[in-house]
Length: 623
Image 1 (cartoon, rainbow, N blue to C red):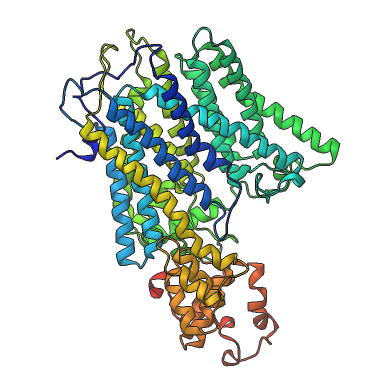
Image 2: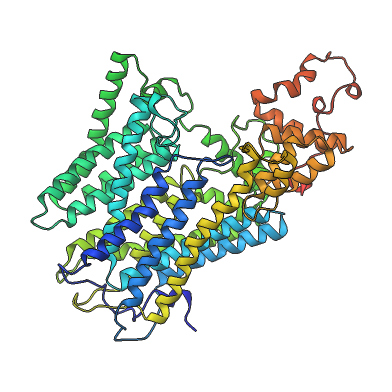
């Protein structure tokens, strides 16, 4: 039987990194098809401005899933048509094995949370599907590299990233300089005055996209042949545009990522002098653009969000330090088995933390902390060790150079792909980009390409092909991935009708009931049921699913009131006490009777939310 790792390799560890002959990397028709499919995977997912409630980015993620399915299907088809390998033996690389093992453990943790902590099936299936998709895309990336088609595939990906980056900078320019032009259909309306968020609606997401676009443009310029002067000049222009876009986003993540690229330029002697100079000067270009925009804002009376943020934001961490401190507190309470995959928000919201941030957090904004608090220390350390091993094993291939390498562009390719992985890993220490398909899948592909080339080098004339019996399952799985993304959109429509009903929509109760039958989004319907139902029984039934997604003010008030009305006053008081810790203005009316009560009034005469609980509780008392 062929294992999943064996699928993406077709030779012993001593086989060479495949190096196609110069000038015959890909035919014109194939190159155009790969560019189009890569565009579906990247450009559509990052430029789609239309959104349907309740999720602002669901359509972008669905486009990423289906688009990457199409791109991977195109690559798997090319692998299936490749000639049979001279050596039919199949052996897996240690790095790819580590990466797939880490994903498998995460899937197992998700299944365990589904079975043991009550994580809704809709949330569990969504997470399992994305993790499995990441494994598939990583396998396709590795197989493509091993088959000697990595240059063509990476060129298509970089072209898509450059196009997505340029269009995103155009969107961000409108959001900053002419926000009245943003219509929500072609250009997303930014909620942050004077800051670019792109159509991904978050400045830090825009910054990570632009950093990837920067790397893509750099590699395209590096890989241009001697006659590609126009391509190299265009690449330089793109790099300046992307730095300007990073300034418009005013994202600290983007600023730190640009410093990482500058370090790359200072250390990597395989890059051309022009590229190294641009990389090293990029922080200076960033600073000059920042000063120019600040001067423009002062002169014109407009708002540049970056300068305004520096003047008004006292907490440089944006509450991250406090959420990290609370996370460490949760880890100390449950160090061995954690709170369960996907259960951080529920555990944090229902555990007493008097100094908690005002915002409702559904993630720790730090990947290692997230894994430890949800999986427990032992399992999280195993997963992190596997991921670090996979990243470490990817580096030798990216760092390797040989005097016989006839295609130096492939060395820069691997280093560029590795930098993409490193940039999103760096971002994951401050945010959670890998929880979004439009970052997870490209990162998995770039990582897979590096791991597909981790075997030692030899003569570049030797090529390796993936057997048809191995390529066919990859093709079938890629088609299934495309179908899965499209099916998720159809499934999503049942909950859209709850929050944005049409003229002929049935009553709310019927729409909620239909949404609760959704495979992937029933928790959104549960939220609607819990916050609109008048019956305490119906509210408590809906809370079974709704509480696991994101506890906010409306949900906590509805939950506490339903518990009190059903006679469970002690647990109602606990939820009210936790809600009070958030100091959210939306709960002012809920606590108004407490503020108006006489200090000497007996506790028995006060509403339940005015009396603290008498017993110590946490989220485990509400499962």
